[in-house]
Image (cartoon, rainbow over all chains, first blue to last red; front, side, top):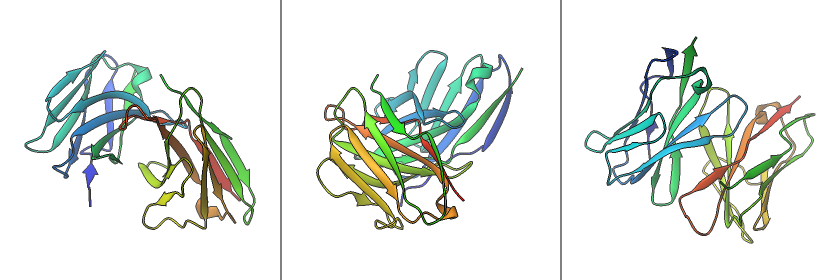
Length: 110
Length: 116
């Protein structure tokens, strides 16, 4: 079955620094990837997505990098702010099936 | 963006009772709705997929008689936890998908269930 995992369960960064959250996947048929942010007691919130025909996509303060060769996905947050504190999940599609990764908690120190 | 609501946001019930959770798509028609369960500090685990007007498809290990799902309209799906036990306590999240974008799921805010 599919395996989607994260290298770091908890990441603590200083406010203003950049954050990098990593995700590894195993299904080579995955062709669409999404990062979600989940604050405590709330549902997942879409952050950014990337298709498998791309290796980088930028949003506002966020960048997603995709390395299909090693099946690795990362989310970079620039100038991390206290409001970025949350759990971040990678999720991927193979066909129309969405699978979530294990999640990384980002803690931003003031 | 599309909005999905859930009701109630949190519920406490006694062991043995049944609890119904509603999931509504507020500004679009959801041909497919998904129900997830999330334990503390864990990821979302898909429980079942429901298509409007048909029976839900349950993931392996999810008891369909325990977790009753009804998707009677294009804007409403309900999850009923029957004869709830303390181990059913969890965070239940629904998501909805419309007709236009097959891979875009809009998530609800979740329902916290505590069974005493």
